[in-house]
Amino acid sequence: MDRYAVTGHPIAHSKSPQIHTAFARQTGQDMSYEAILAPLDGFAATVQAFRAGGGLGMNVTVPFKLEAFALADRHTPRAQAAGAVNTLAFGADGILGDNTDGAGLVRDLKINLGREIAGRRVLLLGAGGAVRGVMLPLLGEGPAVLTIANRTVSKAEELVELFMPEAGDVRLSASSFDALAGQQFDIVINATASSLADEVPPLPPGLYADGALAYDMMYGRDDTPFMAAALADGAARVADGLGMLVEQAAESFALWRGVQPDGGAVLADLRRQIGAG
Ligand code: ATR
Image (tube, rainbow, N blue to C red; front, side, top):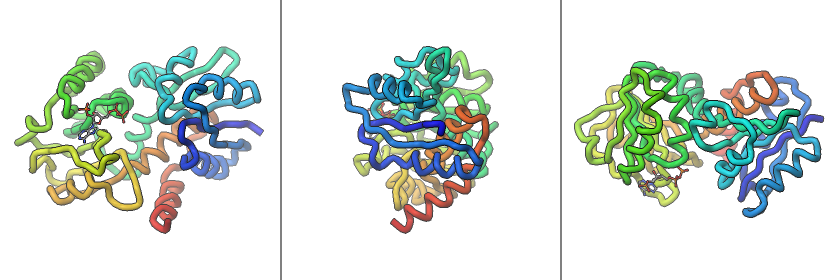
């Protein structure tokens, strides 16, 4: 049977085995998918051992996405732009590194949430790896405006400089949180780590345009603090990042197997479980 796995540290709570097993069933693919804990100083050895045992591909999660980038022999353009890899495909010609996070976000926004990105005003909060990882696919959708706002403005400015050559007609700019005052956006995406500390980025009020969506890359059983704050500030709709998790997996699956699974059905199942859990 064709073998795949996810590796990270920690890994026990990863939902990837469940998601990929559901995709395999749905598309009739004969494959297995397991979770493998890599020691913090043993990422490359873990990958090589899985590959030597016949593994065909791996997903990579925290904290190894940069090491996975370094380990890959070749990179897709979106992995190159992200500077990080969440998907490895093993072939006769070496290891291909891909990054499906941005495509997963875009698919969740467009397919599961029914949001057009083209021509819209998009605000990204944060300027770390999570933001860099989604920049190229987001720009590729052709929003009218893409603003990166971060607590440390210089980091947002560095990202803008890095991606300006890919911006085309998109009005790409960096901002502090304060300087957002008076502006409005159609989609606001929280990619800061603030939710981990149960905090919310200090945003000025009135950011949400009519019908706007507030999207948190984090997820949990209940609305995140960011989602609650967005609703209080007039966002028409809020969403967490569970759909992005499912859709980045769907993109990895498609890369490996050449078949695009239906993320929506798997997302609905996961949502029911988390709600019941
Ligand atoms: P990731 O890979 O998840 O993006 P990271 O590279 O450590 O992680 O980036 C964390 C991001 O969350 C940064 O944009 C950080 O802002 P700074 O660059 O100013 O540090 C942001 N962040 C973390 N805690 C935050 C908080 N309490 N409020 C607002 N932003 C926060």
